[in-house]
Amino acid sequence: MGNHYSFIGGDEGPWQVISCEAIVGAPLEAVQRLNMLNVPANSIKERGTWVLQGFTSNVRYAERHEINQLRARQEGLSRPASRSAALIPIKKNDAWWNMAQDERRAIFEDQSHHTEIGLAYLPEIARQLHHSRDLGEPFDFLTWFEFAPEHTPIFNKLLAQLRASKEWEYVEREVDIRLVKN
Image 1: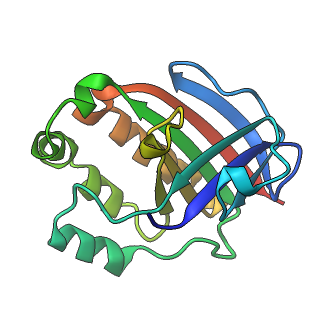
Image 2: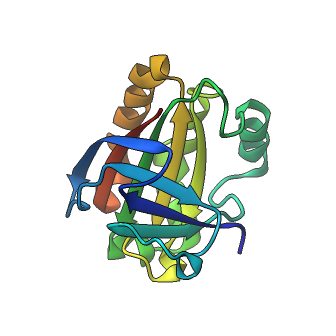
């Protein structure tokens, strides 16, 4: 496993929650602030209202040329101008997980063009995927995005493109949590 992260929704943390919208399925309880710690949930004392955890891992579903393109264009997180963020937890349905890896790859890339869409928004939108399914969490993935406030319209366009893709037919739960750093 890569680095383990805990996203703590509650009354503390550097990120102010400006909206928390259930796109598909059940919502998360509303909170005022979000803290992200590079530790497993079982090692934190302050649990807030909810805690979501995940770990970073190797890039999945991507071919070498796609990984090379992503690494060449993506900038890191915690850029000074990135005062806006989004945490988007996603759970896919059993039909997705019952497919073989090559079948999921065909939907993810060949039909939905997930990586190609994401590349079009780099370097303005930085992101980090956290895997949660293997931890028994309520979501399969936690995607963390950071961007400058003026890039919010293009971030919304990125999400609209992804949500219109074939891949999103397999999403059974998605929450869109928008944040600002103050």
